Image 1 (tube, rainbow, N blue to C red):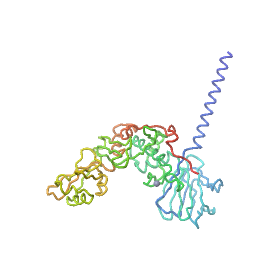
Image 2 (cartoon, rainbow, N blue to C red):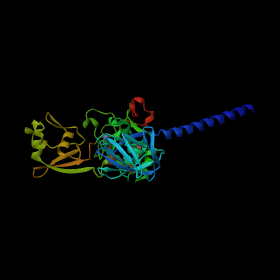
Image 3 (spheres, rainbow, N blue to C red):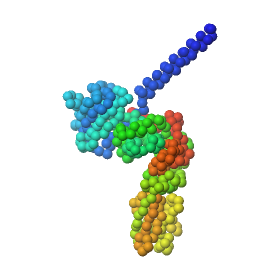
Image 4 (cartoon, rainbow, N blue to C red):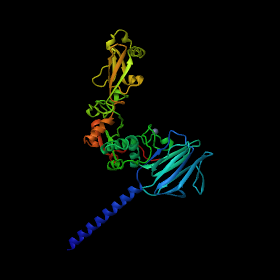
Length: 405
Ligand SMILES: [Zn+2]
């Protein structure tokens, strides 16, 4: 009797302890949600904005000082004035500040913001807003939960009508990019900007609830290489049936960016393209690029032919990078074949794919998702020998410093 009573007490104590730890964890996680600072309207020189609270309760703060509450329906006006931010509501003047924070008191706060000078469209955001005076412009920073930011990027970059497994695959790539580039704008006071320079982010994801679900179901997951380093998560529109090795486009080889035969990109919207150029222009171009052998080689050898993606166009001892040719002639990809037109004056170009061809093919990934492949299958198909794992399990040396001074 005694013994069993003793055991029961222990079990009870243990249960209580587990319960207590779970409560602590839940509280801790909600208090310390992982936040990233995104620089908004980063391509504009913004002088004034209006902010309206659309959900939750906020507090307006300068450092640790509470200035006022800011709740659903409230509107704030912030204008740059003599190098400081002048802040007022409809009723109150709050004074001028070097920086001011509009901080959500819950996990569901959201606000709408519109730059007034210059006059731009309004956008909705989750979580917190920080306004800083940079003397001749305003630094506008959205401090936002990792996953809410990722959902916003997916809605902007993938659009609202994609398959859930595709959203999951992109959620991992977006999260991997985010962590890999956490320092990108550190000197400006935030991690990433909202433009295509980093990852396009137009604010809160609102059009398709599947996006937030896909991000939530893969929370914390990233793509690391064999050595537990975050990968450079590159993608392009369509591979044309074969992806390109990174070292064929950029300097240096990368283990996980190798050429992959990609049947999923065939028969997709950007699988094929067609162009024509003048034969004389082409020949002159090759000469201009220092391909002296053009003069001694018969014309029929001046047409580029490739069964697999090539890094160089080779003529005798001369070489020219395919990426150079693509850029100079404004072609959709480097993966193409040239044919003489019957009259011999023009060259017909039949091309495959769209973009640099390295990493994940977006149209191929869409096809794979539709065919029933999982997001893990999709990522492991395009990135060779990678690990899908939680970023918390990465060695500290693989992660950037995720704090602001
Ligand atoms: Zn940027």
